[in-house]
Image (cartoon, rainbow, N blue to C red):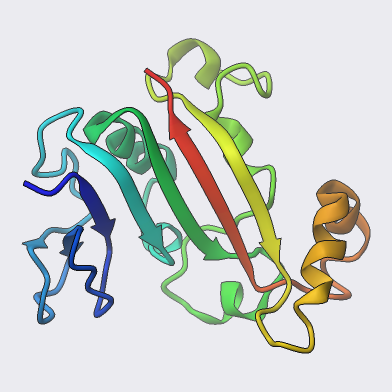
Amino acid sequence: MKDKLNLGCGTVILSDYVNLDSYKFRGVDVVWDLNNVPYPFKKDIFSRVLMSHVLEHLEDVPKTLQEIWRISKPGAIVDIGVPYFSSLNAVKDPTHKHFFAAATFDFFERGKINNYFDKSYIANFRIMECKIIYSNHPFLRWANILVNLNQRFYERFFAYIFPSQVLEVKLKVVK
């Protein structure tokens, strides 16, 4: 079995990944509703998990990340892309259930913030990278540097004036 997982792949099929989606698109290896845990995999089998624009559609973000943690090997990398909270894409889709800011994933790194997950939550990740993507347009990419100079300052004062589009997070599984 391949040791990389493309969760909620849709029509983006990656040849060196197990491609999972809730619909049987061409190339999908496993059909599964990601709201239904546990996922149909044993623990500690994936070295990399990709989840692009899926997490915002699911019912329970902590439960989903706990399940990703369960099926990932120690040290596995989890790449997540979600709409940024102030973007029109975050709010225009009525199937989006959650909104994400730069500090959202701090919640899943034990000791990063003081919350009840530090004591009772089994999943633990280390944030390797967290990037706010203002735009991928060739003329506006330079703004990505500015919004990431101080993410907290940007979110506090400018996120609704100059809304970014996407939040990209790279997590490392800590076991």
